[in-house]
Image 1 (tube, rainbow, N blue to C red):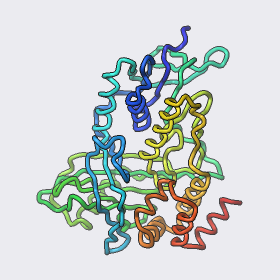
Image 2 (image 1 turned 45 degrees about the horizontal axis):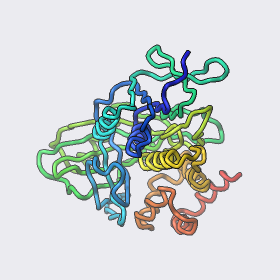
Image 3 (image 1 turned 180 degrees about the horizontal axis):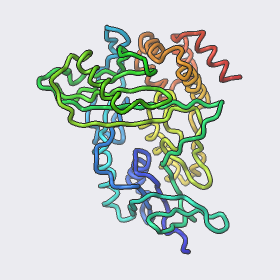
Image 4 (image 1 turned 135 degrees about the vertical axis):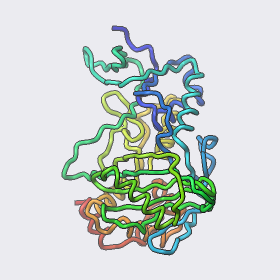
Length: 382
């Protein structure tokens, strides 16, 4: 059986796999090299959107679909305008991202794309192989990146929640939205299933993405997501004449399990490599940081395993918040209300990006409910 003729193998063409591939091409890392990209099936649908805050023009700035300089937060009837500067909230549509990255890959002679389900196995003497469409590719000599997430086994010492959401892009019969102002979180909706909120991102005066989001341990019946979206649009936005142009549904794991970056000769990236912020579900910008760090190591000839994770204290903060969300006290609504009412949004964004200093974190912690957080923190320590 011949050894792999590839220098790099990327399993999965989602945000993590395509971000890394795109950056490798732009950094000229594939000159005189060969890369195999494996994806289950072609990406032809606008199956998701990625929304994130960012200070400066980012790596994918040219495919940003919409930007917002103003966002509101609701926990009661009055909107709280968020002090975002120097951040801008941005949206990238899935189909734009796929087309951009696949066009770049298709035009590069060093990239081979295989569609099918990749199965990672072992062959003689402990070598690893990838089976794809009945063919076996040995990974000997290749650097392998895997972005396919596997649900970890639950244990008594870990928390396992889900961020699940249903979104509609609606078109209204008349202009009703302010295009440059969105709603980051609206907690005015009932919290019966668990921590629940809606965000509203206007795309124009007569269209917007409305997304119903929950942080709970289990999913809802499919019809419930639609019922809640319809109720919100009619009773909070006071819109009755509209059409649904697009739909999306997603599930993001929220767990304090530590996912290994390097395991059994394979580098895990994206959600599979722990790049989801476990207390919020935000992932896209953490993927960009990881992809950038990997490319920097390759350019400098450094060991990729030398990439260090975020400081341990951020994992601790996430575990504390998951503890509270798992027990339902205090409610997610109360936590985020304290965050955004008593801190500038820019400071909260920096904290949620794992980029704050310890003094900055202490200032934020002092604005939260002391005793519930102290009890949860002690439980994590003990």
